Image (cartoon, rainbow, N blue to C red):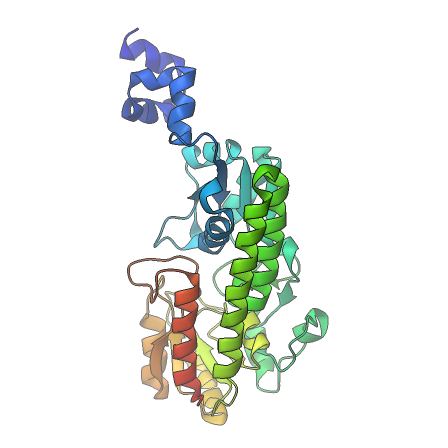
Length: 345
C-alpha cells in the first residue's frame, strides 16, 4: 500500500499523526499501543488546565496518565482546541474540568460522550464576586456575599459588570476561581478522589490514600495563610486579574480588581483615580499582576498612583517563570507576596 493510498483512506487531520508514528502504526494493535504510550493499564485522564491537572496527577498517582488540554504558558480562558485534542477527549477514560473557565472545553466535553466526566464546579459551592471582594465571614454565604460591596465598592462593582476580559461562569456570574481558596480546593480534591474510586475501583484504596495526603497538605497551606495574614496593616490588595475573590473571602481581605478592561489594555483615567482614592483610604501598597499576562497595566497604575508592583499568580498554568514548581509552592509564594503587600507580621 502506497503512502498516497493510505492518505485517501484516513482523515487529513490524522495524516500528520500517521506519518509521525510511522505507517506500521496504522494497524489497530500498534495504534492503541501508541495512544497508550505502552501504559495500557493506566487510566487515560484528560484535565482541562493546570488546577485540574494537579489534582488528577496527585490523586491518580501511578495509576493515571494525565494529559492537560492547556499547555504551559497558554492563557486558559483563550484556549482553542485542535481537532486532535477534541479527539483525545473522546478517547479518555476520565475527564476533569471546571465549567465556566474555558467555553471551548465545555463544548467539546459536552459532545465527547465520555462516561466519567467530572465538573469540579459541582464539587464545592460557587459564589458571585465583583471586582471588590471582602470576606470577613468564612462560610458559604454566597447570596448575601454577592451583595456585599462596601461603600466605595458600588462604583467598582458597576465597573466589574462590564466583565474583566473573560467568562466568569454561566450561572449568574458565578466566580469559577475556586482553586485559589485551599479549603474549597480540598473539597474539590475529595470529590475528585471519590469519582476516581468509582471510575477505577481496582485502585480505590490508593486513590483514597492519595486524596487524604493531598487534603492534609492543603489543610497545612490553609493554616499557613490564616496565621500569616492574621494581623495585616491593610486588608486591601489591588490586582489586574479579579481571580482572588475566594481567597480574599477566606482570609478576611478585600480584592480590588482593575475590572471592566482587557488585561492587556490601559486602564481608564477614571478607574486609575478610583484605585488611587481606594489605595489612599485603605492604605494599600501594591498592584499585583500575573505571570501569564502583560504587566503594563499594573506598571501604569503603579506609576500613576505611587504604588509598587508585585506578582500574585492565579495559578492557571505553571511555566519557567512561575514562583514554584507546583500548586503548593506557588501558593506559598503568593502568601509571601501578600504578607509583604499587606504589612502582615
